[in-house]
Length: 115
Image (tube, rainbow, N blue to C red):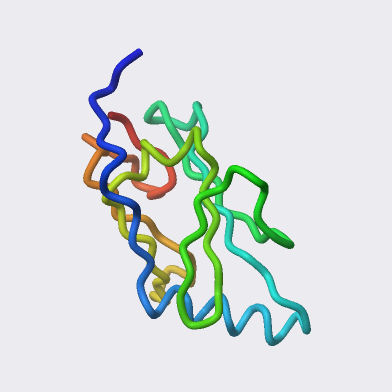
């Protein structure tokens, strides 16, 4: 299935997201990587899975900044082409968020989208 996704634009990670990841690692006492994946499911067709990982897998895309790493597996990478990974601390809660130009619509929770 060709979704017309462009692999030429790697995702970007904001300094705020790298700073939050550094805070998490410091509080935990050991370095942590942020793993961002796209999976089928969710109320709009695809959903983001955001977890902490000990380190990268051999085929991960690794985005580095401020001594921190964000990991993206090769299956998820095309879905995140040109996306921005950020951290938002809002009244409704603090969380990592993804601004994805490939998403044609998303649900209210912000973790599910369609293409």
